[in-house]
Length: 375
Ligand SMILES: [Zn+2]
Image (cartoon, rainbow, N blue to C red; front, side, top):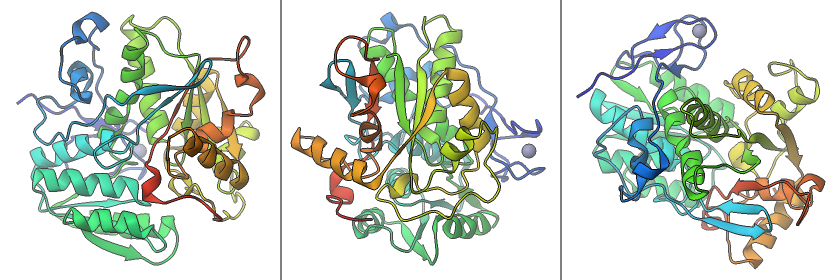
């Protein structure tokens, strides 16, 4: 087995071996990155490989997977001229989180903890529960009260224990972090553990392969904790650095107007979250309703250096986008429609000539939450 790459803190440079128990930077408490610079395989060499995200083996920090459920290789479907949707809800647990969860479960299997814990508004926890079941690892998932009953059912069906934490998403994260400090625990955090981002980055590798070694002018991504956006940014840099991508896309980040700490910081041209941003309101986009994302600085920087922007969507736009997609045959959960909601009436993405080419992810299946009425 090859050695696992180290983790390090992007803020102060502290190095943390991947097999050390620390789940965050021991100096500043921030999330960690991975000291890993892969050389992606050229397009031509991908033909005939396995039909899952493991076809991009050279780009992944773990090779020879044993817990795969066939995740990845989701289709691109045109929504209108120049704008396509990537159907990432067609995953083993019906959300894009499987891309990162499979890496975390694979890593946990090698580290051999007594138990795995995760915290989530639903989809990440579901994905970790499923992949732990596949790996034969005992798993506990912390969820906020008010999490969709269907997601809870899915988590328990995989044999994971559910800990419902009263209060908001932040209270759930705090409870999980306390549990994560207990010896023998692997914290399968989609926010703090950088292996997750090296899984979500395959979203971009797949688009790049499907478009014949190119990416659209714009990648539109929903952002709460920013796991898909930061994964996308990683893939773009890796492909570009390897000379496999001529033009880097602009990253457009979408937040719900009800919970938009990053979009508010962006408006002020700030490098980090603003102090005392407004009280978050309820939103249909529960999966991206994150008031204090720990990777805020990285997210803001990634959007800025790509030449992208932040967009926000209202509850009405979310409702209409979900119905619009359903009327086209695509039943997507209310968080997962946010990107289409953001650009379907947007001037810069107008039909036909002049509009920019874009891909939006449809991240979670509609069956997880049903059709939205009110938040
Ligand atoms: Zn640090």
